[in-house]
Image (cartoon, rainbow, N blue to C red; front, side, top):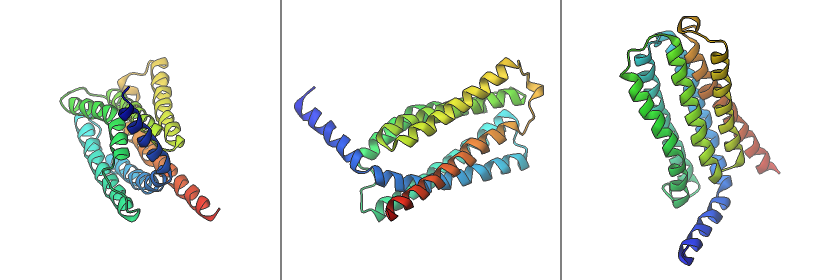
Length: 211
């Protein structure tokens, strides 16, 4: 490794460590905002009966785009408040860590839109794959942010794997899974779980400020 490259990497690591509190402040509103969106979207999916895999994938990919926009706006606002550049080198590192798994999730969703597979079982498998990919994405980003992010990534991965094993062990067929079940999973993980985590981050940040 070249001396200049090693020095640059060390500078990035130090910058990331110095900005851990900033990331924590930025994450709280992002998790709360996207969690609330995920919860509302799951209710909307149930009411609209978006259960067929093409409609389901299209609906939730649309929700994902809105969630990215919400996260961008909130992160941008936090950067302006802290007088930090939005697209800084540490932010680019986090984006690069997130991008592979999220890109795979996008491609899988687009491919699912092209399918004509019927039954809630196939939709549930798509949901579990999305959960595992999202967990891998935030676990990778967690190496540049507070450790709790990596733990939340394992919650997504472990939860999806547990549900997958449960379905396989029971040899569940497509007709035995209720049609609303995939929306409920999405609401539980992308809605309730992220909302609770965002509230936890907000509370811990306030406790640190009072300390």
